Image 1 (spheres, chains in turn brown, yellow):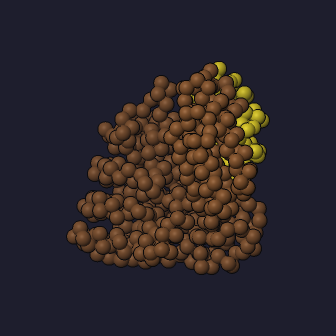
Image 2 (cartoon, rainbow over the protein chains, first blue to last red):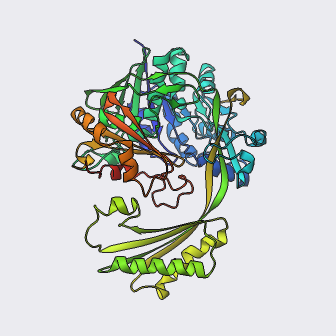
Length: 449
Length: 99
């Protein structure tokens, strides 16, 4: 029976490069996918592109391409990645130039365009924003980027046209992995079980090391060996839709039913209706079976219909966050930290800082879970406490005041405060609207060396 | 008994919504967590953190529950004032729950 092997080469923009190289050298894979776009990444990349029109793609793209292009050519491994971010055209150009530099010939590089609808976003000013409940025209903050979550279709088209390296901007993460499966086995929407399995394969792979024991270890409860050498995952899927999850033999980490279960439910709401641009998947009857060490068989996913609309992710200038931190140690540290917090709060009122939301945390005490959950776990006393004060403001000048007042605790606050730090950041937020599927105009460009 | 003795967990984030899975190590404990760890109990447990509804999904085939907590990430991952903006550490909090 025919099967293909797909590896995950990155689970986020800055992920380690060695595990990808290891997969290509020893994983006997046919495809490698680098998933490098978090929700906000494109909005930030768009700002880079505005400053310099040749930039706006993933910053690690040149390094990754330098390390993998030769291997891809030698081993005939096709590469799919969303490292195009806000500038897929430039990413294709850069990749072509690196291939030339390395003396590689006979490589076809494709770029998927059309996810960026920034220039036509005004058409949708009456669409409702999912997270805020208001209309897009009432959004408070300058729009920086607008990108449609594309599906697998145009990547499949590029594969049909013989592309070896496929670079995209915003594409739904699982779709990057589904494309080679759909291309190889010619599955369609009517193949409910197989398409569900394809979505699940993509979902399990999209965070790379998170299914091979990364983000899983808890000494004494869930032990994982050699995390410093964590191997990235491979899915081997056959034409019936059944697949296994595994990794390169001898690499660090672990693939088990338990690691797969954690990853299956990661960032999932209703397991029976997981929305992707290609199809709504149903993971509610999935089973995992450990068939040998680091080999898990996966069955039982299914799928429903194709969504009528596509999600558009909009990045906008939202607000500023100002913060300051300072540490107190020894007996009574918590009370000095509380006094410090009280001083800062009174000072900020006194000087008229305009703060929309304000927060006080005692790191090591209640900064993660607040009080009702933290109280039963915490010890009698603390050897040290770090006070953190943060606030959201509309204007930068107000955000600055927060860190300044924390810093002033050095000479004006309780005894023995040390290690004060302050920061102001401009917050770029993301919101979403939905637009009709047929309103999106996707195209594929090709370059050859 | 703490949930940590019989189950493991991972948290995911989407905007201002956090999802926290609860997966038993041994299927024999699944009925127990299904009975004890209700959506209401989780909502009460996270009352200082989650300011919206809590929905519970049961995935019988793998012995897991999935809790979806609305308005739990300080206004959303991008603008939250929390140190852990993604709420990644909430999984460890759920496992501290006594049943």
